[in-house]
Amino acid sequence: MQRKKFLLDPPKILVLGFASIILIGALFLTLPAATTNGQGLPFLNALFTATSATCVTGLVVVDTGTTFSVFGQVVILSMIQVGGLGFMTFATFFAFLLGKKISLKERILLQESLNNLSMEGIVRLAKRIIIFTAVIELLGALILSIRFSFDMPLKKAIYYGIFHSISNFNNAGFDLMGEFHSLTGYVDDPTVTLTVCSLIILGGIGFIVMNELYEYHVNRRVSLHTKIVLITSAILVIIGTIGIFFLEYSNQLTLKPLTLSGKILGSLFQSVTARTAGANTLSIGDLTQSSLLLMILLMFIGASPGSTGGGIKTTTFTTLIGAVWSQIRGKEDVIFYRQRIEYETIYKALTVTISGLFLVMLMTLILTITEKGHDFLTILFEVTSAFATVGLSMGLTPELSHIGKVLIMLTMFAGRVGPLTIAFAVTMRRNPDPFRYPKGKIMIG
Image (cartoon, rainbow, N blue to C red; front, side):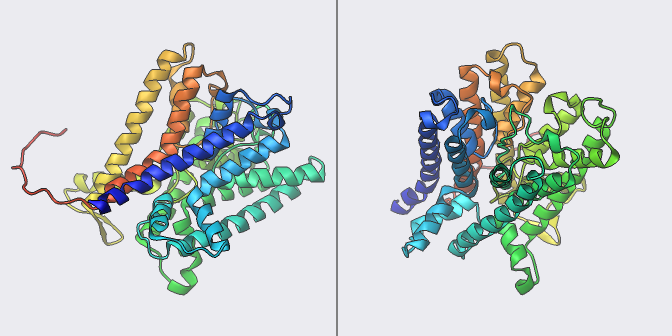
């Protein structure tokens, strides 16, 4: 009995931990020093911004670059970093620096936070996550700073380079370019586009995959999980790029005025960023409805387990596709690379997907009632973006009512914390039922 009670604690602690970070961040953003006008942000807007930053979403009700002072922007950046890597990763890192031993309970919390299958080597993984993050963010900041230095003073370029590197590696999508423009001024710039895309992809594949790739020179093999993540991610990026390229090719407001290389870069960027990053080089409000629907699908699938991104995750999507394909072929087992996927995993994938769909549909339904004057696709896009912690917006977020802001906040929080909690809950050991009911038959399809 005591063991069961202990196992129920980690999800609660993670939820309370994220909630505490959001509340503390919101209080900081209400301080006069946090905004350029010296008045601080109203609490609801501060809470929304803190939720968006901690849940690494990027949806904003006020412009980050013009509303917040350097102090306010640093507070946001800190929440992005902690929210992206998980507060337990930071807690483990500081405990290691102080020479403290990591207890069993802390290891379980860390396992849950990283969505890892095993507790073996979990502390070593946490240490490497900090190292991977520092190296990748520093390289990204260096490249972006050099590029930005051609357009702005060096000091500002360095600051912008650091901010956008951290924001995009953590798949947050916050930017400092002013008035919700994001990176539209660099739509045909290969340096900015490819650097930011690389940061987003590395942050989105997951630290477990990153660690396996790092150890490949020793082990000379990768797990089934890593194979599925890499191949699915690549396929989704390619499909998204090709789809947006052709759907927007003749759109005068997006790709048509660009050169061929600009069209390709713009399409690639929007395909990658729809995988939970939130930055944009094309005006989202000017995209065709076909492109918006494609991006909604990409957002809902999202990044990979144990990453800084959200969504139902690439492995969940691939598992369901594999199950459907097996049914079509009349096969009983779902096979990937000559390995059978357990039925429990398929049930988990179905649970996460249906839960996500239910949340998105419920919030969309309510917002169609509370946010009068906005069409269905705009609301669906915004809710999916919030659930998948993407941050792309068609312009609805700044116009949300108080109720709408609360609903989007809840959606962002559920998208960041909910899937982790659900995943942990369904992996706990369950006592077998003392008896089984007789089989019943229902007709499907």
